[in-house]
Image (cartoon, rainbow, N blue to C red; front, side, top):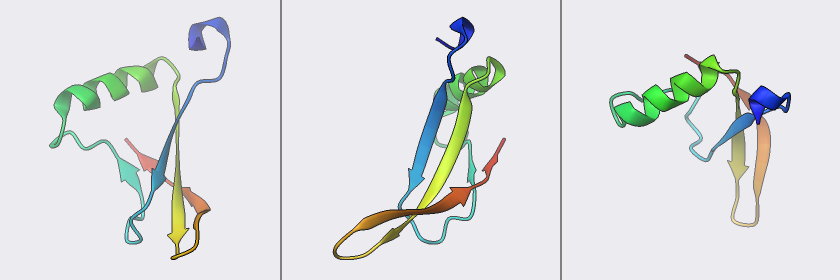
Length: 68
């Protein structure tokens, strides 16, 4: 769909409180890493958000940087 002019976005929502940025974890899944890199090359955007978790809610707090 990106090739047709639509915006394509992959959104990561982080539930761990100590995470300060997101990056591709090649050491965990090299195939996923390669495919994500291909997606980035063709213009897929990656956005990342941190959450605040309580016993009552999960709220999106702020964006986090995505580091390639």
